[in-house]
Image (spheres, rainbow, N blue to C red):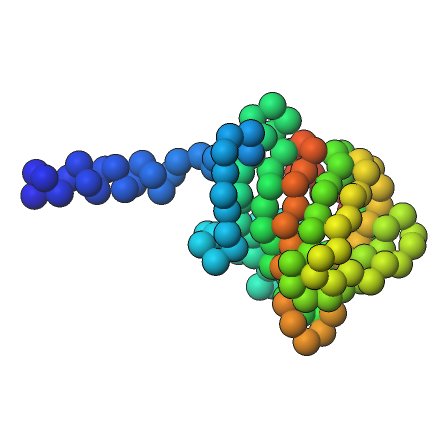
Length: 142
C-alpha cells in the first residue's frame, strides 16, 4: 500500500495539471484529446471541447471543438481574434453579415469584435481547431 500511494498521488497531480503552453514544443492529435462537455454559453447539448494548450502571454487557448450536426451558436463576438481550421463536417459561417460555406480544410480568421455565427450542417458532427488571440469571452447579439 505504501508503494501504491505515491503512484496514486502522482496520477492525481497529473490529472489536475494545467494545459501545456502553446509556446513550447507540442504535438496534439484529436484521437487522444480529452473532450469534455462544452461550458460555452448557449452551446447546444452534445457540444464538446478539448484544450490543446494556452498561450502563457495572452492567455488565449487553442482548442478542439465538436459541434453536433444541425446545431451551432447564435450570433456573437469576442474581444480577441479567433483563428479556426475546420477538420470534419460541413457548415455555414455568418461572418459580419456574409454567409460562407465551410468544410474540412477551410481556414477562418475572425477579427476581434466581428459578429459571427456558425451552424453545423445536418448529417455529420463538425470538428474545429481554434486558436484565440486572448481569453475567450462570448458577447451574444440580441
